[in-house]
Length: 489
Image 1 (spheres, rainbow, N blue to C red):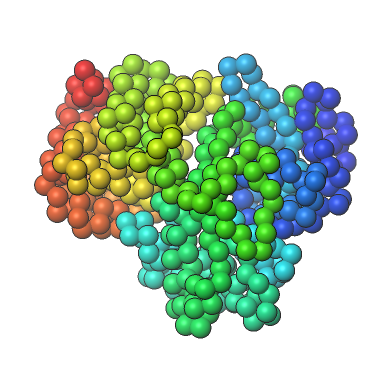
Image 2 (image 1 turned 30 degrees about the horizontal axis):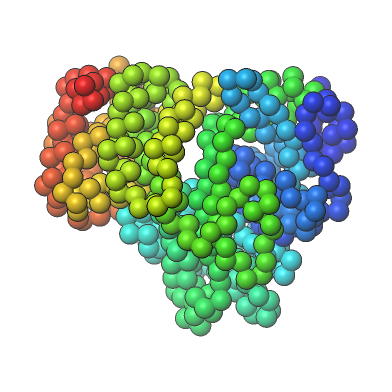
């Protein structure tokens, strides 16, 4: 079977949507750092929708860590398939908005030169929470991070996303070129403000005058992004090959739902995102908070408890009535009261999320969502808990989510099998777990002392400790299913 590429595009079956524009006329207006599955299921699709009338906004992607995306897409001329899955089946479409992918390690100079080029007006990012080299508990740059230390000592050959951004901005500043807008599409609280703080601080550490220029001239529009994107399997590749009549090394599987809320702050211009389904707003923060606390907080809770209970996929976990009641209650009773969003039907949003979680065609792995929990917990669960504590309100379901994470990072599931815990703090956490054994309180005391996750306020809060330890003891003694049923009735 032939490989998907510009040459084979004309042989794609008539029922499969393909780019409706001449790709030879495209020029890049966006550089995207961290060109993984989520970007290709989300932003790249919105851009694909508008290139017919705005061909100067195509994307050049960059992989900061591994060259696997470049290796998959380069032989395909940047083309790939997105497959929307629901109960009605799998619906493929070929996306052409990515002109090329650069490997930042092997092509760093080429990438920085492109980012410094005046035609690039937006640099967007999906580098995951840990890619910002920050302290997730405070949102500040982690100045002791080895990549940050490297980039400050070697500013012209940066490794980190903050280092890349600042070096490119420094080159533009030196050349008298207006700065690009920096648009984070990651699940960070107040992601625009957070990235602005990180990048400005890094620039100031490099050079005080550069820091002042970045602070006064660079726009950091905030965003809220939403689409569930499971990892692609070999079975998915075979399915797509059968549907499009060509091999695609890295198709993207996703759900019908997609949402993008963007703060309208682009001094050098932007594509008309609002014409292809994005929502442009003056303040994106309420939407970010809604998504982090309702969708992401629920997802993490399902991931840890579901994995421990033996559920490989989110849809399997939420099909259990007890899990469904837990997540419905977490959103309704604990997350929604912390949100102030007049004009938004939070109940309808909750019901929509529950339906999305239940999509059996999606096969979203609990293990995938469970990755990097130390980076995700502060935004997804702990912020909501802090608000509940401040209001003197109970948070038993949220506490169970935190306890589920603590039980998960022990690295041994309920059957006694090893868990492949993927997390920047995995070694430290497993050492704490090894010392604590099956003593829930000792495990809690060890893990809550991770200030980069919990800060100092929660570590010193008796109500928080009591609630989490109670649930953690039950997880050790009775297991996940019995604990959930005891909590939700």
